[in-house]
Amino acid sequence: MAATGSAVGLGNIWKFPYITGENGGGAFVLIYLLCIFLMGVPIMMAEVMLGRRGRRNPVDSMRYLAEEMGHSQLWRFLGWLGVVAGFFILSYYSVIAGWAISYVFSTGAGTFAGADAELVGQHFDELTKSPLTLIFWHSIFMVITMIVVARGIEDGIEKAVRFLIPALFILMIVMVLYAMTTSGFADGLRFMFAPDFSKITTEGVLKAMGQAFFTLSIGMGAIMVYGAYLPKETSIAQTSFTIAIADTSVAVLAGVAIFPIVFSNGLEAGSGPGLIFVTLPLAFGNMAFGTFFGTLFFILLVFAAWSSSISLIEPAVAWLIENKNFSRIKASITLGLLTWVVGLGTVFSFNEWSYIALFDNTPLQGKTFFDVLDYLTSNIMLPLGGVLMAIFAGWLMKRTACEEELAINETAYLLWHFLVRYVTPVAVMLVFLNAIGVFS
Ligand code: TRP
Image 1 (cartoon, helix red, strand yellow):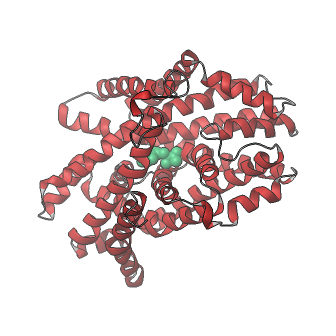
Image 2 (cartoon, protein in one colour; image 1 turned 180 degrees about the vertical axis):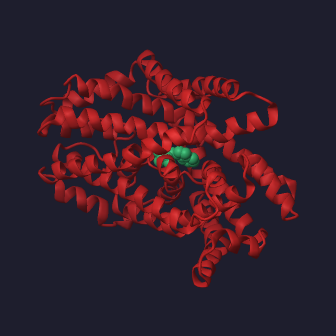
C-alpha cells in the first residue's frame, strides 16, 4: 500500500499526459507500456528484494549486500546515485505539487465555473509568472512533506493511501465520463492509442523509458526502503505486479480524461508541464458539480504527491540518521531546507530564468533548469540505477538468496531472471546509445 502511494503521484496525472502530448501520443504510450512490464516490473522485484535483504537505507543496504555476497564496496555508490536522484526529483516535484495546492483553492473558489480555454490558460500563466506565489506554495508543500518525514513514516501513510488511491481512481472515472461527452473524445482516444511511429524520436524512446522508471518510483532506492519493511511472507512478485497495474491504470485514465479536452478546445497536446492545469479546470468548469469534483480532485492530487514525495527523501534522511548521528528531526529540517533551495531553480524556470543564455551553443540550448534536472534524473539516473540493481540481483546475488526472497515457481523465476539478467541491461544500453545518436 505504501509503495503504491509512492508510485501513484504527479508522475501519473501531471507528467504522463504532458510528455505523451509532447511525444506524439500512441507510439510513445506503447513503448512506455512495454517498458513498464518488461523492465519496470522485474526491476521493481529486484529492488524490493535488495531492500528486504539489505534492511537499511539504500547506501548501507548495497554496502551490506555487496559484502555478504563478496563483491566490491563500490556498489554503495549505487545507493548514492539514488539518494542524489531522489533529492533532485523532490526539489522540482515540490514546486509542481505547489501548483496543485494553489489549484485546490482556485477551483474551490469557483474561479473556473463556466470558464473557457482562454481564461483557464490565463490563470495558469499568471500563477507561473509569479515567483513569489510559486515560492509560497512550494514552501507549504515542503513543510507538510518534512513534517511527516520528521515524525517517521509508515502507518499514517498506509491508512491515508488505503482510501486515497481508490478515491482518486473513482474521480478519474468521473472525469473520463465527462470526457466522453465532449466532441474530442474519439480524437483523444486515437491520439493515445493509435501508434504512429513516425512521431516518435530516439529521444522520445528514452523519455518513455525514463517515465516508466519515474512513475513506478524505481531505480533510486525508494522501493528498497519499502522492501526493508516488507514482511517475509508477502509475495514480492505479486506486490510488484499489483503496483504496476494500479499505477498504469491511473496514468492511462488521466490521459483518457485529458486528451479529449485538448482536442475539443483546440488546445495544444504538446504544450508542456502546464497541460493538466489548462485542461482539467475546463472540465470542472463545465461539468455538473464541477467545483465540488474539481476541488476534491486537486486535494487528492496533493495527497498523492505528498505520499510520493516522502519516499523521495526518506533514503537520504535514513542515511543521515544511521551514519551521521542526526536525529530524525534534524535530518528532516536540514534536507528539507536544502531541497527547498534547489527547488527555487525550478520556480524560476517558469519565469525569470525561462531562458538560460549560458546554455546557448551547447546541447542544453533552450532548456530550463527544471528541464535539465528532470532530464538527468528521470531519463539517465533512474534507468542507470535500476539497471545496476538488476545486474546486482541477476548476476551477483546467489541464486539461493534470490529464490528464497522471491519464492515463486520455477518458470516465473526463470522468466524474471532472464529479464533482469539480459533484457533490462541490454534494453537500457540500447536506448541510451540510440538517444545519443549511435544508430542514426
Ligand atoms: N512515482 C512518483 C510519481 O509518479 C514519483 C516518485 C516517488 C519517484 N518516489 C520516487 C520517482 C522514487 C522516482 C523514484 O509521481
